Length: 109
Image (spheres, rainbow, N blue to C red):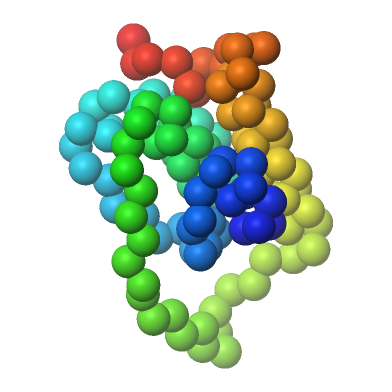
């Protein structure tokens, strides 16, 4: 998925799916994040918004350790998430090309 996302978004991120993010106030003031999903796809939508609105994305490596009591996502949830990621990429590319407009990529009202 990361390879596909990097190609489609024109980025070179090492990971899209960890969910740990930090945003500056200017980002939250400008992007319409309230139009995003309430699920895991939110992270991918925000990356599309950051790109669309011209914000810089910087990765900071973080060590992760998953213990035996860590939760795991089931197969069906993983498939739904993957399809949601692909949908977000598709919508971003359509919006960027001007073929279709999406509210989550429009200026905040």
